[in-house]
Image 1 (tube, rainbow, N blue to C red):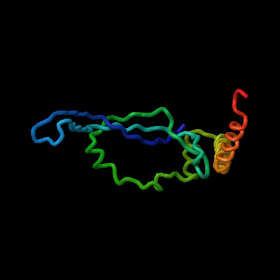
Image 2: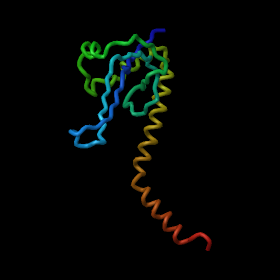
Image 3: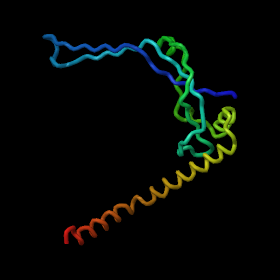
Image 4: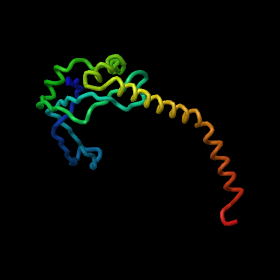
Length: 154
């Protein structure tokens, strides 16, 4: 079974906290905090069938819990080699690619169709809730009026 991986970057480093005052400080209680990152670790995660109903078309994908860890890399070296940051729209995976990723990870067509159907049910439920929100205030007002008309203990 061939697995496709997604990457995560985590940082390791030192934190330096110092507190002190001098005659030249405007605020004697001021603290200076410095954080220094030295190395990062890159983790490769498998992509699996997900459960995010926000996916507009096709099966959703998620990162698996298991990962492969690479050795640590100097953060300066990483920043030098990593390339340009992607725009938000460039990080969206088209439905055709998600389906291919899932097939190559061993998911069946039936599993993907079932998950898509479940996500549609969740979306419809959210749409109904959103549609009913304006009526919630009317319901609350009616319940409050009923409670005031029949106070407890009488």
